[in-house]
Length: 338
Image 1 (cartoon, rainbow, N blue to C red):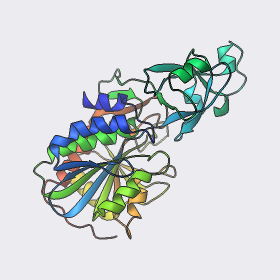
Image 2: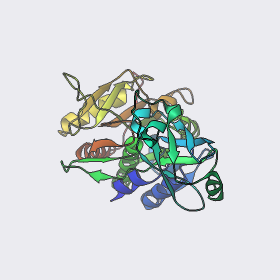
Image 3: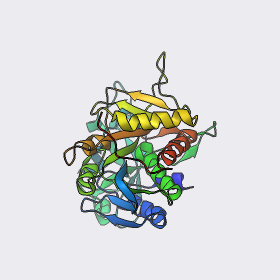
């Protein structure tokens, strides 16, 4: 199952090589050409008529990096992207080396020694235990700067529409773009499917690609948080993809959003509206590139965002693909600023 392989693949920000190769193999037969730009983005281009459109999803995931090794071999780390320390305690991890697989467990001094935990641990108190001493770690090529990836695996849950795994942010978006490329072989428009790097640490990849491609307009495909614990929730698993009206960094382009909303209504596709005060996406840096690019965000709401294991709905993903497919069924026009 492609979605499972994407979710399970390793690819923390700055080390997207493995996930990039997987995506390249999956999409290359469904587009005109595939290339890798100077910062590492995977760019899949489909020839067509203008306007030219950029669809972006980020390949990278949250992760960790070794910053210190103590005399006993404990690995202290820096977080890559926003991860709550409480989510890391007791988690399995995979150290990315060129000399073989190395797995470890995240723990603390108190938990290691079966002592009473008096307070929630700070990130600086967490460490990875691999069972190896410093000499053995060095022999395996593990040192300061080694990437540490989360080691959760894809699982379908009790409700067969709901699945869980690491890196749903944003392997869901990558899956949507790959499946969309398969369905749009006969679409008329020129489309750039861009799988970006380093979104989790600064939205850098999208900015570079948008500057080079200079699209007439763009959509970022990403995930957002559910709020189903609220009294009157607006983002729930299984209730449709989300259209971002506003997030912490930008306001979605109303012209593109209106296209999506009208298509959804006309074709009975459920959608949810995302207005939030936290987080942002690649859409932010795309929208302010090259003098300004009309940009919107189509997303999928997930539970436990930016944690070691998240949950999402398969039907929400399929409805996102359907909505985008309908958008490109007939040649689309240039978006008028609103």
